[in-house]
Length: 491
Image 1 (cartoon, rainbow, N blue to C red):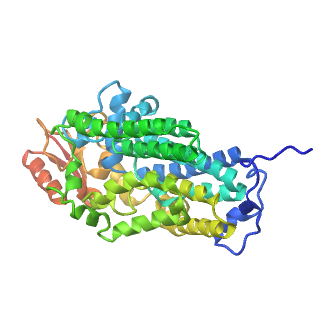
Image 2 (cartoon, rainbow, N blue to C red; image 1 turned 90 degrees about the vertical axis):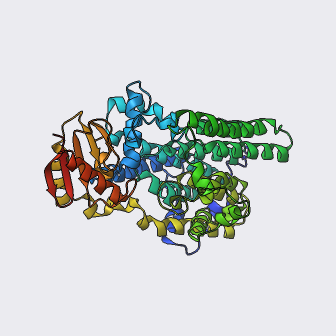
Image 3 (cartoon, one colour; image 1 turned 135 degrees about the vertical axis):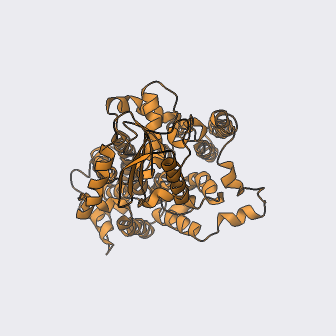
């Protein structure tokens, strides 16, 4: 008598049906499965390793080309450098004596201190971020293999690794949410597999990644409680306890911890939520959907989930992050640039896998095709394509000039620099921003690239020009002044 086949191991009809004409990216996933693809662990880790290598190539090369910035790679390097030497995370780039835990609550980045102590370079952070981001591919690929077989697993793994939110974040300096991406991938996958304890344990470290992620932990707890109530053989109390813990952790960090370390004694980002004044209850709903760029964010997120993912309760985990982004008056939060959407990608792809179990083959194929199409269309728009661009690997004359300028500055010097030059110096000097008034006698060196397009943020061009005038009045001697590159030395 043959052994019974469990539902988890039984091949899905989706994986057995012959595929119709589909987009090129989807066609790659539906070819005959190779022996490698039939082994979910090997497939998942192979994809993760491949994407980690791609992310690292792009990130390291962008730093080599001088495209990394003080905000934020330089800031995090100064903080982790302090942790590596057993000191508080004081970050001169944020201001004199600025304690970084007064900006955002991310003590988990301290675990990188040993790696940085061994390899004291901003590239250490870039490579670690690449490894962390790529790790999100593993649980989603393995779950997709369980649900729909190796072909869909390959597609979901590639869609995760090449997703616009993760690719943008992996190539954009370093940020604390590099830890949140894999933690969320494992947590949401555990939720989809109905493993509440694993989901809770994977989500708890999010409380140490960033203050707003306590709300996401609360959402995980609410979903655990909802699942328990539906299944009736489990108590919803553990899920409710996790939800309360997430809410309490966010309240504690925002109202107590961050103000305690902040130089102004408050939470700097309240003003972005209230628009600089008293918010109107009537105006808040209108701010969620205006200006229209916010709809682009929502559309791309839904399309990444194949639109069918909107039917999955797992997608509700996106609500806390979307709420603070859409309610803020900071336009950087509204769109699909920067690193803010990385934490949404594992949730969207998990929602897609979740609905594959509940829809017919036609709808499943349509959802997978939409998700694959989004990946194919957005891939040329984000930095991952730089790997195959010859011009991205050349050393321009401008880069040679910049390196010569930086080479004039000795190690352990004090330097006031513009945004992109600063992050080239943070590993070997004490660096502040050139647009800010110096403390005491001033820095020994001032290094500015006036052609740096990022010089407008975090410093306005006018502020940089004004401070250069101040330094000249103080007798700083120009050693290099050509093509927008300026190097001044204190007398």
